[in-house]
Length: 493
Image (cartoon, rainbow, N blue to C red; front, side, top):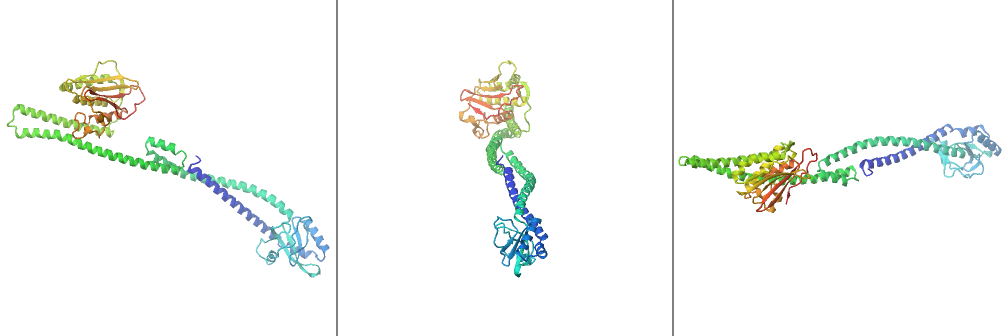
């Protein structure tokens, strides 16, 4: 939280507002003090002249009497009698305090010349300090010129004023500063929150493009980063993800092109044979015997059936890959399905000279899956096994309860599959699907099987020994089991 962009902006803004508030308070205090001095000096501008005009200053006794009277009447002022050079001759300040010996005359002359107030001059009782004053020219005893200099803020007044003023300034400044700071912070934080929230939302939207594992890793690695760093890291990961997906699309496109080329080759062979049979019937119909014509027609029909089967497989694979027909799972008995498929495939097995065994009916194992798609999986596996099993061989179907679900298998006693071909058996890149590959294993049936089981979130495993046979097996969830099986990759053993 401390490293978030919002917190950093909030702390920085608070420091800026505090500094600005302090500077503004100092300026305000100075302005108020200047205004107070101006008002005080304006009100007392003629005080020294009034005192000099209405009181005799002929002798020392007169001056001392006047000073004592002024101190009694207004103890906040201090009165000084200066000579023509500004030296202090007499004063009304209390004894025992240091007194400057001379006062600068420049401010006094500016005051007498009517300069703009406030004007500050030396305070004899406070070294280095200047205060507002009132001054009037006088004639001392013997007719010598001098000045009656009145400090409007005497030492006692200054001490009391500074103490009270400081307390008031601190109190007022504290409350006003806190109020201004709180108001500015609330307004600023609301604005910043709106800005950072949009950035955070954008970072979240970018992270949504990442795969689940990349998003989890991003959340763990970016726990201490602010929104900008998260957004930058998310863009970097998204860029890498897009680049990886583009490479995958290129690879899939290459595989798709190869598949199209392979399918085109597979189509060309039966179509060429079909064309030759039909052309022979057309050209040599009058010279062929009835048996020959029947044989050519039967061969043409078989070739057309092969073309139709391949076209149907292409359509079915495309439909499954586009997920236009998602599985519609239901509860059914897998043993009954195996028996039904055995009866349906018996004719094809007899034609191939292969025994198709589904075992005894036994107990009914209930599974939860799309019965139509699972029937298609078993039909493709059986059809593949029949083509790979020599005459006199056996193809067995089975289903048994395991700890994770119901295991269904199709095993044959055929020629088997080479170990180096097992890892790519269910991929488009399998050498079996290239021109010249094994036609019994290189069709689209296994691709359809793999895609259907992937949609069911389960995997297919293959055990094969060359010269002894092959066994395909997969798991289905038990009816009523709410935990789907993981969709792992193909396992070949």
